[in-house]
Length: 421
Image (cartoon, rainbow, N blue to C red; front, side, top):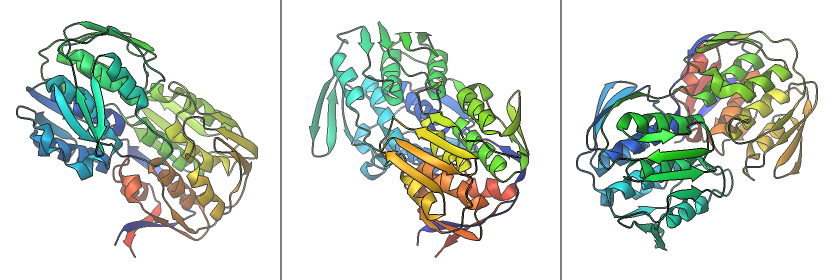
């Protein structure tokens, strides 16, 4: 039977919570280890199911992986066979698409299944494929597989992406890092996981100019080396726990945080009325008295992150007045709002990209279903403040992106149980 969360609301959270390594960064770093046959030491690795599944994919292809502790591995990729990619797992996680870059760099021809991930809207890889084709890579689709073949030399040294795509940027960075020439990527994404990958590739021997900007110039090497690396903190987990503490009028400290990755989010939390203090590598959340309505405009980094929009919608149900959320990136990113309405939230969907939230409203426990990682986290947050009990189904989606989410909440005082019904 599938596991579920049962939450009894009304508990004030308090204490310390250690934020895990960033899943989206870890996915790119693990993929990039395929660019070398030397040994890597990867630390601060989150044990979310997406990362554990990615490690299983690598292991089945031939990666030698040794766990040194629950968050640190040694990995070496001497004998890799892309024909051994487990199709079911590959199609289960979106991170699997990142393997295109290093596998194409290492093998002239590869065949991969279609990648999986959240059901938050149309997420085609048109931008990725267009960029690959401009490098002279041949792309064909047959029987639910992509067949890709690269030339001996790339045809272009300048690429302009169609959008600020994180995964397309990362795939190109890995290809360029293992190329002896120089490749410039324009309209590159700037998210923390892109910067983390850039630092990692530099430690492997590539030269990268422009990290943190929308123009990257990469001079690669055919022979890259192994290195030691620590994954950056998970900004999305940090934002989720900040809202959890604030919503329950609690207080606590978020440890292992990089506040610079959360600039716009923290600014909006201040506008809403969340009481917190920023210190090096941590955020101290203090009891909040009253929340105010605001406007949330989701934008690519360093704008307000789409992956913190669902959680923020919950705190807006407790804010005084009318709030507007504009989510232009994904047309199905509001699926959780229907579940919040079942709990008593006053929400009006203007169109697939805009929602009005009226508050404050009292939430009541109900049976709700998770559609994706962040919407699931939002429903957990709602359960923390709802009257009576909330039953959350399909929690496997949540565990794709959060390590021991229920245990961390329980350590803060939440009445949350994982059950099988």
